[in-house]
Length: 619
Image (cartoon, rainbow, N blue to C red):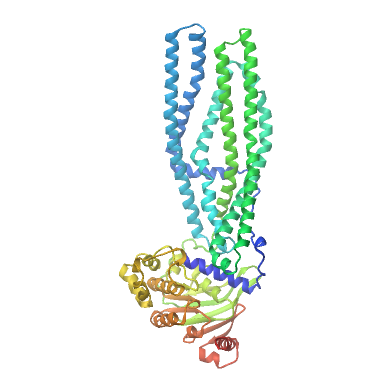
C-alpha cells in the first residue's frame, strides 16, 4: 500500500511536468471536486433494494424485529378499544368489577408494549451495526482493488468521506428505518380498518385532509432531496481540504500560509453550515404539515362525532376511541414522512458509495489467468506506448530487452518517462499499445498478485505505517520470522541504528514514520524489499533524499543485494548509475541513448549533458 501511494504521487508529478503543468492557483481557487459533484438523478428504487440487500444475511433478525414491532403495535391498538369498552360498559353504567378487569387488561397491554419495545431496540440496533460493518468492509475492499487511475483523480479526503461519513449516514436506515416503516404501513392499514369499522361516515369525514397533505408534501420532497445532496457535497469538500491541510502542514508552515489555509477552511465550514441550515429548514416543513393536517382531522372527528352522539348515532366511548385512533393514525404518517426525509439523505450518500463500488479497476486479471511461475528476471518492452491522459503520451514506442541479472539505470529529465516504465513493469497501469513481458510472458496474461510478489519496489518517498520497526519491515513478507526480519535489516545496514532506539525492533514509529529520520526510513524500506526477496528489484529515486554517508552504506549493501537479480534503477546521481550494466537515456517518452557509462560519456548526447550539468551544480 505504501508503494502504491508513492508511485501514484510520482506519476502525477511526472504527468504534470510533461504536460507543462498549470501555474499554482490561489488557495481560494485550487479545489475542484470532479468526483464530489451533487448528482442529480431521480429516486432509484433499484438503489434502495441494493442497499437492503445487505440485510439479507440477517433475515432471522429482521423477522424478530418485525415480530416485536407488530406485537407492540397490536398491544397499542388494543388500548383504545379497551378504553371504549370501559367507558361504555363500566363507566356509563357503573360496574367497578368490570372496570377493574379492563384496567388490568390495559396494564397487560402496556407491559407487552414495554418488552416488545426492548426486543425491537435490541434487534434493530444489532441489525444496523452488522449491515454497516459489511457495507464498510465491501467498500474498503473494493477501494483496495481499484487501479491507480482511480486515485489519480480523487483526493484522499474524498475517499475517506465515502468510507466513514457516507456509510455512517446510512445508520438510521438500517437500525430502525426499514423495519419501522414496514410496521408503520401495517399500522396505517390496521388503524384505517378500525376507523371504518367504528363509524364509516366519521372516518370519511376525517380523511378529507389527506389529499391536501399529499400534494404539499410531494412538492417539499423534491426540494429536500436536492438540499441534502448539496450538504453531502460540502461535507466532502471539508474532509478533502482537512486531509490535504494535515498532509501538507510542513509546506504550509514553511511558506507561512496558515492564515490563508484557515480562511479557506472557515469559508468551507461556513458554506456547509449555511447549506445544512437551509436543508434543515426545508426538511422541517414536512412535520408541521403532518401535524396541522392531523390536528384538523382530530377537530373534525370531535366536532362531527359530538353531533352524531347528540343524535344517538354513536356512543361516547366510540367517539373517544375514534379520536384516539385518529391521533395514532397520524403518528405512522409522521414517522413515514421522517423516514422519507431520511431516505432522501441516505440516497445522497448511497449514490456516492455505489459510485465507487460500481467503478471497475482498469487493471484486472483475465478470466482464468494463471499465476506467474518463478522467474529468472528477463524483462522485455516491445514497442510500448502509454498515456495517462488522452493525447498526452508518456511513452512513445519504447523497446527494451533486459537480461536476467542485469542492472538497468533509467536516466532522463523530469517527465521523460522513467517512473512510467516502472509503473508498467509492476502493472500499476496497462500499456496503451505494445506489451511488457517477463520471462517471455505478457504481464497481462498472469495474475497481478503473482507478478508483484516477484517484484520489489523501493521508492523515493518511503512510507512507514504506525507500528513497530519489526512490523514495518515484515510488511514485505508477512510470514517472515523475527530472525529473517533482523537478517534483512543487518544486510542493508539498518540494524545499527535500530539497536540504538529505545525499544529496538519494538520501537513504535508514528504515522508516516515520524520519530526517525528520512534516511533511516529509507533504510527500512530497503530492508522491507530485501525481506520480500524479489527476482526483479526496482529502485525509483530510492537514494535521492538521503545523505552521502547513508548512500554509501546503501551502495555497499546493494552490491550484495543486486547480485543475481534483475534491477531497474531510476536515479539522477552519478554514483547510483555509473556501475549499471546498461544505462537507458529517455527524453519525452522515447529512448534516445543506450549503453554503459563509459560508452555514453565518450560521445555527445543527452546523457553527457546531464552528467556535465550535475558536475557544474556540484561544483
